[in-house]
Length: 218
Image 1 (cartoon, rainbow, N blue to C red):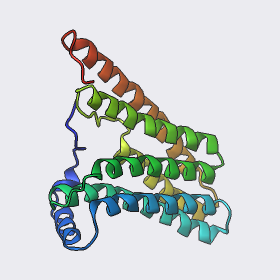
Image 2 (image 1 turned 120 degrees about the vertical axis):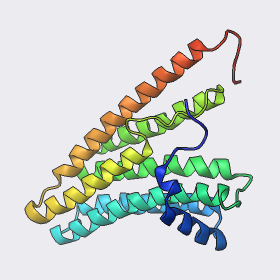
Image 3 (image 1 turned 30 degrees about the horizontal axis):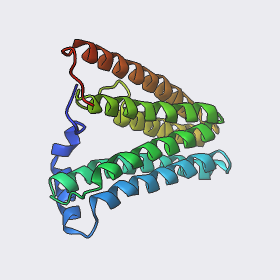
Image 4 (image 1 turned 90 degrees about the vertical axis):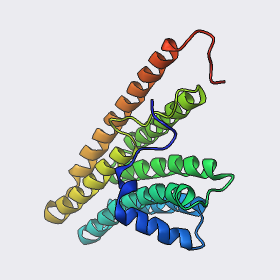
């Protein structure tokens, strides 16, 4: 199992540190940055949905907008923690805002992808599985096992797949008027997220069985 903070290579890059320092000097709080992820996820959801109900040239723009918003959502998830921890602006209710918006954002983005492809049930299933990955992680942490951020389809991988699918779908839409790439990305995301739920569950069950009898995190 891992620690309580998601390991991210981008956190140690120069550009991320510079932006985090700049954000730390503004009036923005970590909680507001966390809440911003819901805004970008909602925009991604709307852009995905609208891309299936408009002319080809507009659909291309909307798919690219959805891809951008998926990445902006991730940037919110990166900088809220950096401003809170490295910037020393943590707030008492920060743990809630660090987690709750992520669950809403996952559901919104995957639902939007489902609406765009005409498979709403698949998008909702993906959203439910994404929430389940977080549930298993937090259950393990509550039992004293640490936070398991393992994949193969944790949040960064889900957003990478959907971002790539949206960009490829934009190209495909512009050339041929179809968006099969987004459906393929959604299917891969759902399958990968389901695999992640199972693998994290297996890891947690093994860890619980391996610890000394009578020990508990509750």
